[in-house]
Length: 603
Image (cartoon, rainbow, N blue to C red):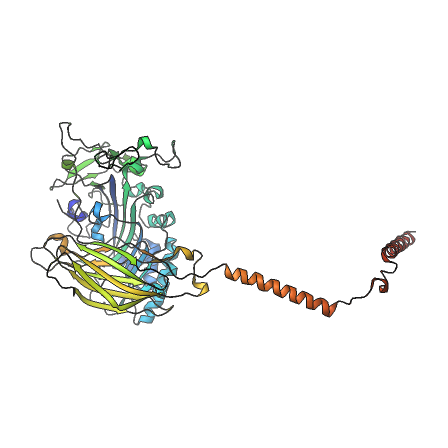
């Protein structure tokens, strides 16, 4: 039962041993998770031969993205939009072994063809600016301070042959970028059916960005098979973890603004010893609750995309064979031989929905919940990261890495991409092992360190680490906080500065007899950090400006009056002779002269 997502869901290559059997196919994989959650994975894949791509024959490959890649000379591209946190302790291993996951915000890495590093940097700048306009994101803010050149963390996924010598890998991340509907719309426009038909018709911004965790991925790579022409493959993936109870709640009927339920409607776990009238530990009452596709996504699946391969089932779900599932008419069910998943071929026209009824409970003379669910897969590694220390001058970072396997060691590459204002002290890097008796702390096999340059580039740190079985490793290091210039602080400087997530690449196991999951490269990202820097009082410049302006106005005004004005007595002024009475008489005299002159001219 402990199988990866590729093994328990009927994958596409189960029907086609050759990746070139179809030019385009799509599939939706559904997996119920603990805590009344549902993992929905949308996968879209299309192939275009390199000869057609070079001849600008864009049939399944999106023209808008293809022209950018041709102009810049991009041989392989990976783009990620992520939001939320994957709860590995409750949900188990990440979908797709973490290869479709990115850090919080926007993450981009690509292999560019260039003769020198300077030329690669210019192409990278052009690529980020073009993708920024295409996906309505702030990718143009990935400058040299947010760009790194990984050495051990990333490997090409495509078949590049002997052209690796002039390929340059560049990686950039924007942890502060807010992923929203403006990024989903251009994502859908890259698809052949553009969200009008097929599984893409289920994608809605309200549901996607209401998820507990979501990730949008775009991968472009060349793929070659023996005896066949190489193709350029684009794969678009959307993974989201939906809360079943919240997704089923109507958005505009009776409760347009979601409000917390009253106390008497709360479902509490009465088995807890601290349960009382004023203390409620929420129970997972929605575990096994019935749901349907139209309830979860708010709409029905509208047929299939006319360009997709009809032999590939459109919807797959990961539940035991003993669970009952009801579908609309004309849907064909295909059960997997392992008894843990099944797929459905959807009619080409009409609406499709699938209903998963509520699980039976103990005492109902039926199967228990444990018999009707699949236990989540244990991940290869647990990782968490946090800031340590106090004060505004120095701090530290601590990463806790746990190997849950009782008999197999885990080897991985740990990569940190830090901003330039975090000046780390490499001599403070320490690795402490707990849980494995007799194991020394020298588990770091290789270190690559590229120090930061102020306002020029960030810090790059890559570690090759090997964790013994059933042990916990604490990686710690200290850093110094820099003081920025006044113009370098953002408008919300007191909120803090986002630090990108760490990238952990789990290397394949070399031990004989290792399970299939350990024979592939797996990735995972830690959570991002919020760093507090020394922040000046931004009201002081305003106070200084007001004070100096007032002082200058008083000094200049008094000096100007002394130099320009002439002070004389009231009786010495010709217009002021006789005081107020004289001034009024003079004014009446002038007005009379004007009226008389006007009358004479009129006559």
